[in-house]
Image (cartoon, rainbow, N blue to C red; front, side, top):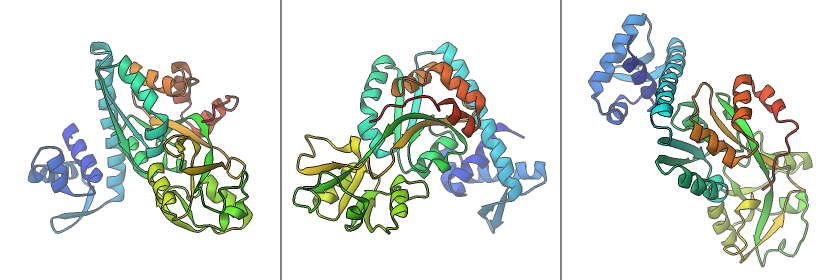
Length: 324
């Protein structure tokens, strides 16, 4: 069994069982990957992938367990490399962050600017996506950190740490019937078509919980991952926007009316997470603390040692998080 074979089977899964795309990504040949996969299967005496002719069709139950262990091993290999780099190149390396558009646009710019000034030789890469995409990037090791709020049930493979709370605002055009209201009820909101985040109505969404409690079936006519896109469609009159309050700019959005909705929806909590077993370099600890000052290196290490999500949540039970 070779490390290269484990990398091949993991990457085949990451590329949706497309061996050709896997070979292109790894700068190798398709027959070479197929041969190595077959050799590993022969050595283990099991099929990792089901096949139809020359095409891979699915991962077998045994294969899924092998792939899970392979991902753990590959993660440990990357951690070994990071340990070495921490001693040979303490101020150099890479930092990959997976996050949502709202976090990237409104919460992170100042943090990123300060980090780059502090570590000019660290290459920083930001990957934007939906919660499911962010979860996948971090879980398979393509991102060092996941920063998100919604869909936290997707992050079972990650250690998630609370950073701050945030509230929502209702955004309308100046001529909208709600524009003159200083306070809006959930019944008022339910009378109009809504424009909100694509992940705003999942099983854990505070928006959905509020409408469910009121017995109202909201009419969501447009969703997007970007608050700026949502505001554009509010301007077009498509509906009432429900967005993060931090995404309302008093200068850029002066043509819109923003109404506080913190009385309608419970605040949400943004968390930063990383894969269990990952080695965190010192500049990574610094990034976490700069983003959330209560998350010192000592606290993060305590959370890592706990591992269990409920125990980690209990660790922060008495911490008063800031509201943005």
